[in-house]
Length: 173
Image (cartoon, rainbow, N blue to C red; front, side, top):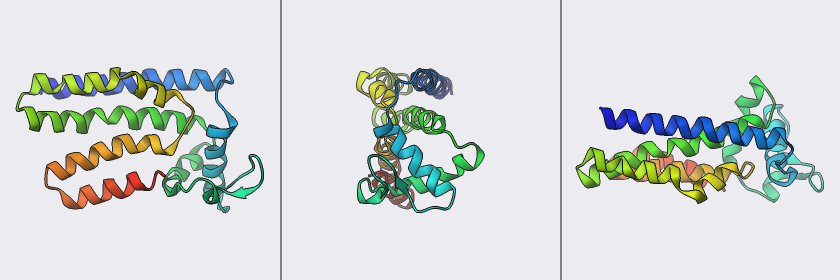
């Protein structure tokens, strides 16, 4: 319906705007080697068949410092184009997608579609979420949407989906 389309427009707008701002920050050299660089090196090493490692500050296996198994799912992006821009855009898109399960949760709880739209609006307007989206790349930020998807699945009594979303959320850190 109209409310679902409004949530889709809101999520798409958030993803586009936050992706553009993240990319602009990166292209203006306002991202950091310690955060974005570590995960860029990790995903690149996985994508090229190497053991996941980083060179900052020393050449060490990444999982000795940051255990984030979800990065294995990101490697195919680097098969297309090995660039950290993927990580920034992915983070914005995944966080924007959190509006959908939040809307479904609110719709079920409120039995009121127009009022349920307020929750994704507040989610996208939430300043800490925007700061999280723009602060380089951190796999654990993906857990926000993954946990919303898990809660939505649990409330809809879809236990297998709940366990899958929960496992992916745990894999972010």
